[in-house]
Length: 184
Ligand SMILES: [Fe+2]
Image (tube, rainbow, N blue to C red; front, side, top):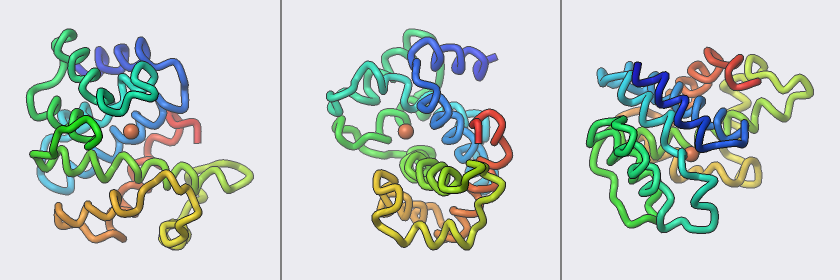
């Protein structure tokens, strides 16, 4: 099964568990977005799951981050051209441009995982189930909170016809559904 092979490849390439969890969180949100938009949850999920495969290898080389992942996926025979394109274009610094709704979804889902994870970690229990939409909306509006979760990138979800509030709720639901895998 493609998903099993993809997760193996992620684990072969990424040693830091928090990074693997970030990719699992992105997979969950991508699948939920696909369901919402009548797209293919398996392929959208695959793009999310593998999108940062090369992150440790390309540290300090943003111009190749994403491109290297595409090379590895091609070598492994994983993903179709739309998946590979979405993975490449989640990082504009490598010179690729977003060309599909899958790519648009990935670009917005990627930073949302960071915001939601940070919102869970501020609770002493560090549990996703304690995060509510209301507090997530409040945190979204605080620029100093989880600064790396770029709000302007999250907001691009509007290109796919989702409102920000709907996207925050969708992301929260999706991550809560796999909270065990995320360790949260
Ligand atoms: Fe990412």
